[in-house]
Length: 252
Image 1 (cartoon, rainbow, N blue to C red):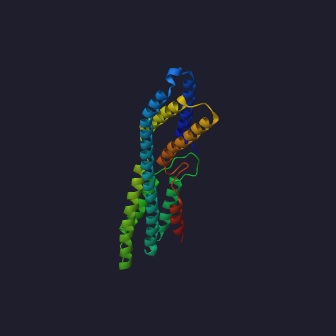
Image 2: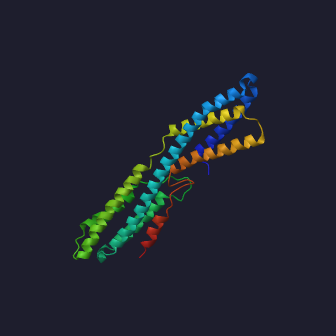
Image 3: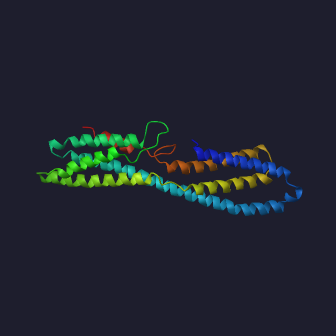
């Protein structure tokens, strides 16, 4: 469930709390007054608000990107299904295009959602590009004799253009991720907050449990951001179901 950043953030927050407890026990009594504690907490409230704003914006941004990728996959799968239906109207000598489209879809699923654990998705693949170009070239070179075939050809070419556009867009977007300095700064601010929380807090089981639960929740938020940055792998990922349904409907 935890990826690298989430685990590191959890350890850092717990470590900052432990340091806060240790430093707090050594503070002179003159530094442990209510006025001092109130002043420190008021100052750190600003950091807390900034941390909450940044985390909220990061989650909203990555969720928006995740939803965009999900919509692109659904659109891609729908266009594959529609293209297969248009190819079914072609003459008998072009029926092999449907087999080519099924092979392309199978390869696309295997590359985008690799079955091997730890493997990275491949959004750009030269063989897949050649397969789609091959289908497009054959459709362009076909001269239909009937109006129904001409209409199917026009629709097929339009769908092929959409497929190529979406495929390229997904490949370009694969490396668009949340800037890591944002995550580093957010983690640093949170560590500072947990340090000050523990600095004046009594050392008992309830306080320790609250700090651990809080650290876990915040770490999960950071974990979620990184997970949604990689929409085709990880704990939170885009489902391959639309593509699998498209492949299923392509069966003769």
